Image (cartoon, rainbow, N blue to C red; front, side):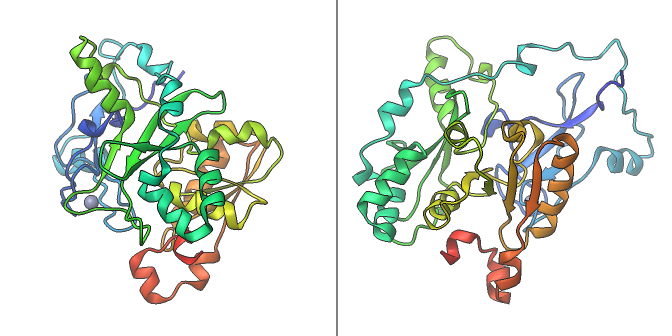
Length: 314
Ligand SMILES: [Zn+2]
């Protein structure tokens, strides 16, 4: 058996595991490479920026070692090989009651108010309930996109704030994004449980819907908002969201076995998604992946500069 590579991008365990990108200087977008034997980073700037399209910074361990005149020691010795822990296996789950407690009060939910203006109350509320969109008190008007897997287990919830008129995310004076498992974790901290004990394994947004539509073709886009809006316009597909391009990996796509899956990249991201589809196909031979070129073909130069997604057109 070949041991895994010695260096890996630090798995996402909450915002504390993401750093400021040395190139674009955005906060909380940078993942460092760590030594799996020790969990230590190689250096502060060796890692990858999540803004693949708009930044693209990726300093690999092999480049770092060749720049410093060392050959990369990429195989952990048996002595320092980190033993597997519970973290490598079982994900943590949030209690199911968080769904019932939050999937309501839509009149205070900016994102749902935007949907109401677009589709009317009946359709907007039905969509929000179908996708388990919650209302959060974390910021006034905030919503929660719960990630519930196909066995109905709650992995986490992504809390975001939208402008109710434009439907755009509020990114000033800071990017309004928070995670339900971190908030629950910080409460548990007082009870003596460490926040980092939560073993976060994200799933696709909307994954819980797969069980009700066993034969339907699936469409995957980046944002939760796009999935919800597109499912009104194109109900012949089951729309899910990856959260981000890096959010799409073989682990998350295992639930799609046996399906036809259409990937819907944002404008500018077509080539990245084609590469991603090839990687995923290799790991999941029972899934037929197709990448949609629609937006790339119809986007104007200005829309390309702005990186539009499908929801901007609908
Ligand atoms: Zn960057």
